[in-house]
Length: 123
Image (cartoon, rainbow, N blue to C red; front, side, top):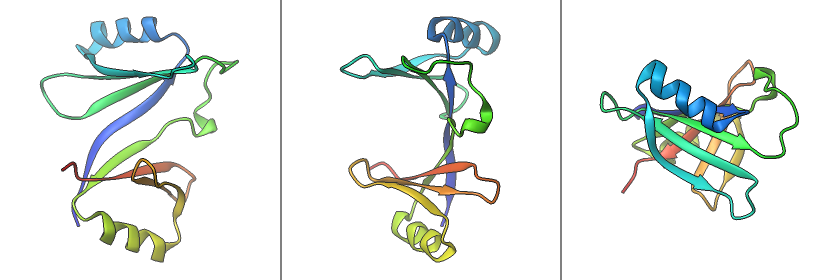
């Protein structure tokens, strides 16, 4: 099995301010975005020409306070070439904490409680 990191997620309180910061500080620009039909969230993926790795900035309309890293509101994602074998291994390790069958992905939890997203290779 080969795992490749593909994106990191950060939740943000002010999306426009964050986009301006990441562009100015790191040269990261918007690659694509997804907006909920009801306006409850906006997800923007930013990156550059140096790597395929992206930063996912998520704005949630109804989040009331500043973000606390301890809320597990972020994740690191890995793309794997053999999704079925990876899933089997993670089942055996009893570390799968959430599966989204509709989206074809799942999450595992490390010993400290951090969530890691497992994605199949794109076809």
